[in-house]
Length: 109
Image (cartoon, rainbow, N blue to C red; front, side, top):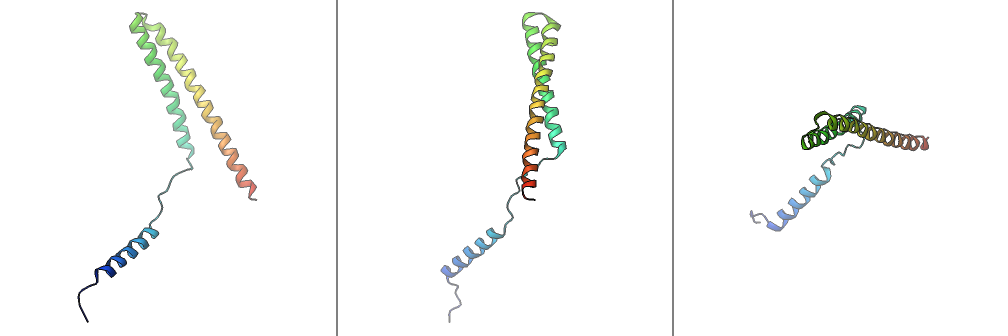
């Protein structure tokens, strides 16, 4: 009887152990459900970005043409309108997703 380990058997054992460990690893969670707070923050960010882009464009045009408050005021209002428009589209999308999810859960009943 030999005391030296068989390298082939050790390699096969290590492979089996690695396979078992890999099979028992938890799968990474992909969060698909968002809380209401996350949706609210998304809509707030959309509004602020719209206003910020409008202010930036208006300020840039005012500096370029030397008409200090006029383009700034105009594009701030336009940016606010664009932000509200994007928020409304997001709200419609969320309502559509919620209705589809409700129909799917009611279908099982």
